[in-house]
Length: 231
Image 1 (cartoon, rainbow, N blue to C red):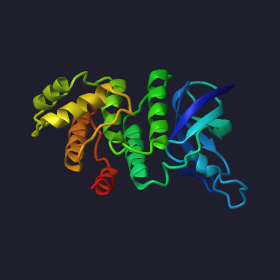
Image 2 (cartoon, one colour; image 1 turned 180 degrees about the vertical axis):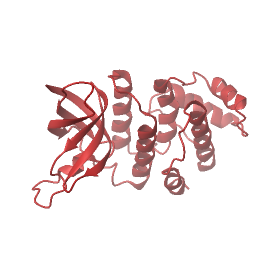
Image 3 (tube, rainbow, N blue to C red; image 1 turned 90 degrees about the vertical axis):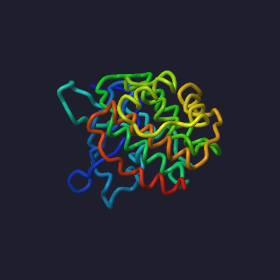
Image 4 (cartoon, rainbow, N blue to C red; image 1 turned 120 degrees about the vertical axis):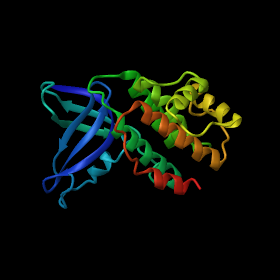
């Protein structure tokens, strides 16, 4: 049966000689895997594989037979927002790499969750279109994303209590506490100033906070690249 839905690409793996299996977070079905044939063929007349780069926003027509089926097929696919800056700006692309890895490691939704889907779309569109004050996006994203995973703190004090209970060895100073409260409550385009040292410390704090609640989060490989570019 054919269904129209929107989707956010998470990643893909190669399948056989010319195909891929792409994992997409969809608006109507949660996380789903789709097989796409022929996109890696030298005979392909279009660069369709570019549609399946991480965080690409898609309009989809998909085949879904039943819930037991683990891999589905795409009937139609179209990019709803061609990226003009995100893949080409080193800071943005490193942030996007980190956000993608966090989504792959933490998203488990196999049912529709429209508030979460709309939050992710809003964040990706903001990162693509922002021309300034986006260097803290990954921190804002984590502070807000935690709510959709079920463990978001409503105040910095609440977060600090949980960190203390789990023996986190560092405390946030007053400026970082204020910034973190803004990250929790304010929209992505709310301008926040944070120096590099505090940005790095807050990133470590938020990662620790996520690990408190997500057993098995493990190593985040994109962190080294992100830290290097943020120096």
